[in-house]
Length: 310
Image (tube, rainbow, N blue to C red; front, side, top):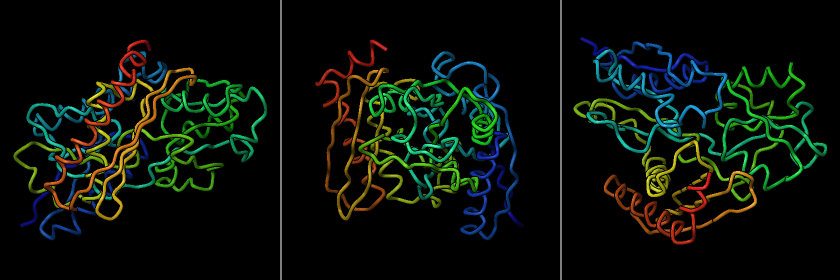
């Protein structure tokens, strides 16, 4: 008899893609499993008229799914990992991180221009303080305009609303929705450091079910995001603050870049650390230690004052 795995997700097109992707991984790895995808509306989906920092960043897109897990309505929840708070909710676990997609940020402009080609005073839409700060670092003359909504909604606004000349979005979301052709520019890490966990998915479940889902983990991706999330945790920062982090496994080493910025893009602290580590599950603690050490470096260089003043 097949085990039915109930997967919880948000209702957006991208969230459904993510849940279906995890559903396919489950059925590939578990011949005895079938899936039932259930959709939920989160507070972040309901308050679309307000900027994210104004309504609080932690758990906006995850709390409804966590409540469904604790109520035994679903067996796992699939999140964009960058939306998941760095501290586990009691009774719940981050059981798996599948292979990460594109971690970078992208520009979608009205006529296909790169950032450098946009006219003076161009208006770029984003709801991310991190993207805002880095865009202003790259072009101090531009106007950064708040925008909310799922990816297709924002791209449609670019076509229909002359308040925007371009948008800054996650490249992974555009690619997953078959919208890669709308990308005008992909930013390098030197230009725009991504959010911790960007491009990665999180499979969250009740603690007692962790073993069932852990086989979905792609270890290099899990090690990288463990370091990035530990950097955020060490700074006590989240998506409402202008902080970037990106880690990658290369050979037998894990390298981590971190950046803390002022909202106006005029000041930043950029750091990097690397640690040798074997590619095995026991290395997750070493990866987290790397992130915490980089956070300590940032705090020693004034990151606390920079973040506290935002």
